[in-house]
Amino acid sequence: MERLRYYESKLRAADKVTVIYQFIVVLIILFNYSKIPHGALFLIFHFFIVGFLLTLPFMGSNRILNWIRLWNPIPLILFNFGELHYLVHNVRPKDLDYILIKIDYFLFGVHPTVWLEKIYNPLLAEYFQIVYTSFYFLPLILIILLYRQSRMEEFDYFAFIIVYGFYTSYLGYFLVPAIGPRFTLDYLQSFPIQGMWFTEHLQQLLNTLENVQRDAFPSGHTEITLLTMYFAAKYHRKYFNILLVIGGSLIFSTVYLRYHYVIDVVAGAFLAWFVIVTAPVVYRWLNTIQLVPLRSTEECG
Image (cartoon, rainbow, N blue to C red; front, side, top):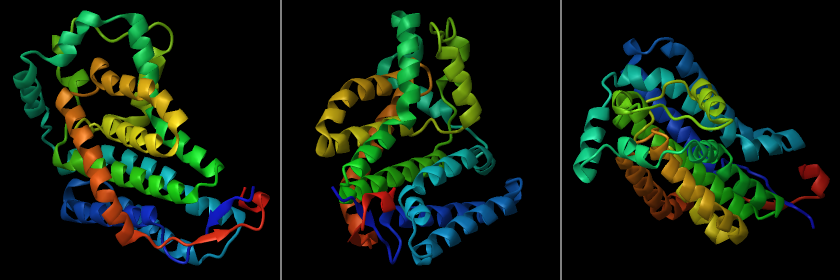
């Protein structure tokens, strides 16, 4: 069956969200320029991203450009996440973990990560660490499934949802910088999280890729996982059935593995709800996509 291709004369909705986020970060950098090492370099990167996206619709049409148009949000999300390591703490040097700790303790009368030691098991820790790491692939799998089925309207909308979700969580890190209980409550824990085979390697991999981020509140893992589950239920029921187990386990793992406070998970769930509720209005406002049939599947790649 002939696959459909989105051929833009203007920006996609996901790209517009990306551009808006770049301008917001540029303003944050400018207002805090003296606090940010190599601030000029970050500004150059952001202006380059904006310039590239604004000119991309007018670069013509070929296989490489069409792939870039469809898949550019992935590397840009990763870049914008990586730079948070250098921005958030310089902009907001005081971590607010103590507030989140107090909220959790008020709600439960215990520190949840400490209490969860009661059900600690190396095999369970291994499972949760693998599931936690799978976070990076869950939304991507749904996007690929939609693309391979040539469901380009759903593909475009879900790409917009993921971009919208990630960038709203990134802005949350500036508002409430926090490093998470694995650092702040470590002195209360009786033992480190250890699995059976891959846990320590996966922990080291994540630490290397993510650096020390102030990304505890809200829980982006919770937000994006819930968004993926919600739209999988609408678009791909078989994948949703798998996500019921993996997604639920992943959200639980955020606290079990001491990456997040419970209030982070609650905030992530609220943010997912906010994105779902506001997305239709925002998408209609931003959307300028045109759907054009391909000449052949091979041309699309």
